[in-house]
Length: 556
Ligand SMILES: [Zn+2]
Picture 1 (cartoon, helix red, strand yellow):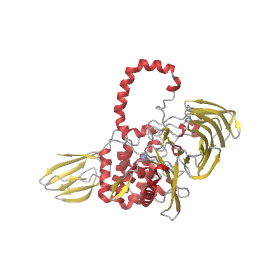
Picture 2 (cartoon, protein in one colour):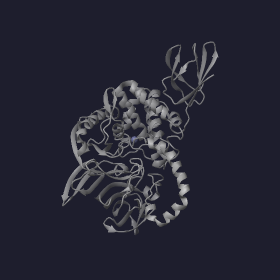
Picture 3 (tube, helix red, strand yellow):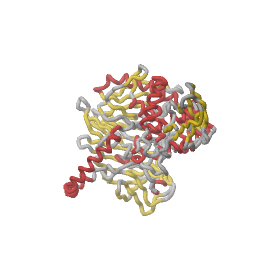
Picture 4 (cartoon, helix red, strand yellow):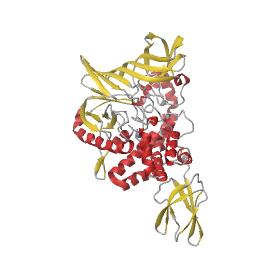
């Protein structure tokens, strides 16, 4: 997901709303008492992840099959979800997440009807004999009116709208709140369905459903068509979704860096199909850039997919979304869309390399944002790279550490500071400088390609730190801790200690670090450790003039 400018403005709006709320409180109390159903649709408290419930810690999700009929007129859905899961311990209760706006009508486990209750946006499924170790197939029939997205993709739900020709156009965005926004699931980033997902979505036959993986079939009965999408890859629950529109599918083929041929499919509104050729050309070029740094396109056995949606784009696996404005900037004379590129970078950094807990979200957002800087480097050269990196440095707010203490962090907690994007990217830039390109780039590619960090295996900040430390042959933990787990910046002190003589010290030095030191018009890379260094210079030396570090400098 791309950083939201709206989030920054939101505090002021929140304050205004709070004042309005206090003023209107007496009226609201009597209103809510008479209107519980309206009140219960407020989902602003929802988030995804957090502390893993013990009942969910014993289940490993293997597969989801979601079968839904979408009633556009009534803005409702009805159908079932089959959750295949492995239990590591016998239990009398299975726990799945599903928001309370849906009514569960039946639950079967291994084809036998069982008791269930819905409470606190969860389904508690019970049986007197308990559920045994091993595989359980949990079938849940449910229906309801999905939440309407307030500010997609940041505040998610369903968006029911129409294209310029008056055709229905429906988008789903659920990163902030999780898959439970429309299907029963284990809503935690530490578990994905290792064997993938089947989606069977029924819509009016004049519309098309865009989904993850490969389209298996379209079956039409009377005036309704069912689109059967299937992915065999593991996938985050917030990427399990579909978009509906009067789409035309524009296709092409991409040959990956390893020589595999992958279909490119762009689900573009018929009204915008003239735009398709350019989007596909940009996708091909962007894939080349991303493959250069991070290895082969991750889902080569399925497809490179894009779907046009009415909101800002999202990183939905094998079907990223793209807003329908088709506006591009020029970088090095070439057209470029940061939204298209950022969401696409998430195919590597989010979908393939996935953090184990929301607390490590900088790995997904920070490195996807850094990927944008690498796109600048490829398209516009060093100056374009420096320009975007300078923006990331200036944008670092440093109000909260980007890796919060502990695990069991929620999606909303980790996004609140905003620094997982720009500061996360700038951290990668600093790391590049500290260990040098010859180590940095191959190690970054290793992180994106080594089986121990990808697909079914999730990563934490410690995994990233250990990998870079091992390859660099130096303990980088103090460096990772300083920039990711605190809000500190380097405290650089320059002191004149004699005729044309200066001492440079890092007051809060945590390990020896390299710096560009400029004296008498000459710049030299020097290592400064706790003791500091002394340099000869007619004028006060410049330390780190190009700004590889977040720092403050004082001259005495
Ligand atoms: Zn993002």
